[in-house]
Image 1 (cartoon, helix red, strand yellow):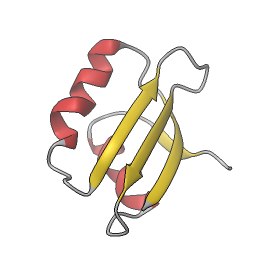
Image 2 (spheres, one colour):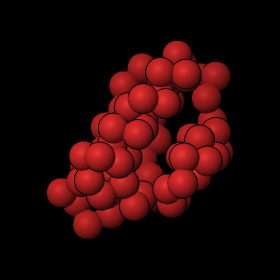
Image 3 (cartoon, one colour):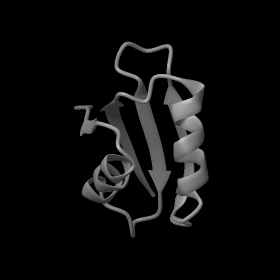
Image 4 (cartoon, helix red, strand yellow):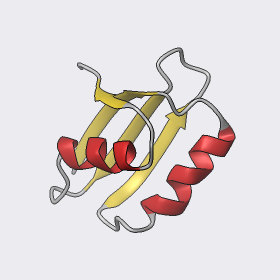
Length: 72
């Protein structure tokens, strides 16, 4: 399993809903969450080894949101 943490601009439940609809296309993502209360709107993704950090960033960016890796 891989675990990734990102800083995003996914700042509302409406924006989280956009991600929720699209994340179903990625069965390798086992769990995910967005903390809209955090100043960095942290996106956490747990996935199988078939998914890379860049894949998540590209997926979120293609939906029109900013997404960048947060250091551990």
